[in-house]
Image 1 (cartoon, chains in turn brown, purple):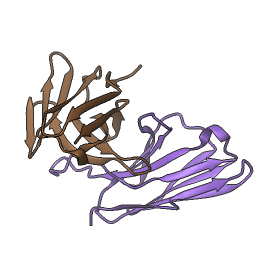
Image 2 (cartoon, rainbow over the protein chains, first blue to last red):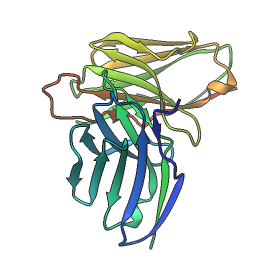
Image 3 (cartoon, chains in turn purple, cyan):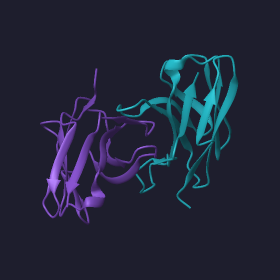
Length: 111
Length: 116
């Protein structure tokens, strides 16, 4: 039973345009949702989070939207840069602050 | 200092060997975690330590034995592993107190384990 799903394994975007990464979840007990970026052979790096009681959080080029009724969240990156190319994981946070990750989306930003 | 340090970075071990993975953080975080990541898969939770006590074991086989000697250190002892245990093992830490503003877990670079 996948509690967090990322249905797009890959996404290609032109530099300067908007990247939109999507995530769905089934577990209503998550108190926060987090986005991590990961390069091969490295640990995940935190990007941005959103509380389950909010619907939007913005940090620079990154904005996360949460639609609680649809159990859906999305990460918007604007403008996209080639250095943003990486695997992006969505995660839900449990009561011990442990994370349940989605399967990831490989973002490629084309120059 | 927002680092989680894992050693070694790479480890090759035989199926009869005993080895240990080490993780260290000095951020004062009272929750520490072991995750396992196979190629092209997401990290999967193995163990959670809260205030140096094991609080979650995600039905991990006993050939993996975690240990938390103090609030800064987390070990994962390995014995009689199988080739399918080859993976990237990630350590993470986070704050636990409800009043803290930080929400994220910080991850180490991981140990790339190969069982031969």
